[in-house]
Length: 123
Length: 112
Figure 1 (cartoon, each protein chain N blue to C red):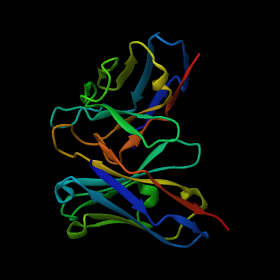
Figure 2 (spheres, chains in turn cyan, orange):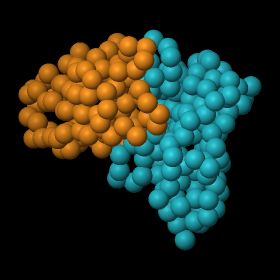
Figure 3 (cartoon, each protein chain N blue to C red):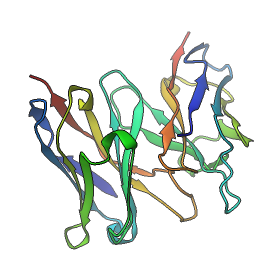
């Protein structure tokens, strides 16, 4: 079964940093656009960032540009999210997601989701 | 950014009855390649979201055929022909025609 498993969540103080990881299995990770999507407690979904299969292009929501960095290591089938200057409002479950991109199902048709990792930013 | 507005935000439906959720975008979602990247997701309680519908009206074989999507331009609808107990959850539309991708607020479906 195809799978995405996130790790690296936890508690951090405002202004701190965390690095989330996501390990992919049983699908062609190196040919896949990948995304991070987050969900604050009791709130809706928010797209965070996307990265091209070869890592050469990235896209972010404006509020996270300059603070968050999405990256990947195709040799390790792994996706990362480096989060710096964390704010209380960044508290959320962060999901690692596959974006089919320009494939048959099209952009944003997120077809594989991880179970999520919780990030809590609090003093 | 494209603003996605769903209505209603909550829905209480009797088992076996239909349900309909509207999703409106602040700009046309037709991309330069002619496709409309409007997707629907379902999030059951305590679970990760799951894709239901992609490109307005297409769906995977694992999605029950009581779910259907329609619409064009800026106006889209998710319909459930006969609500079942397993349909309880929150439904989100999301546009991917323009960066940044944006979700609707979500519509909570419960059984009456």
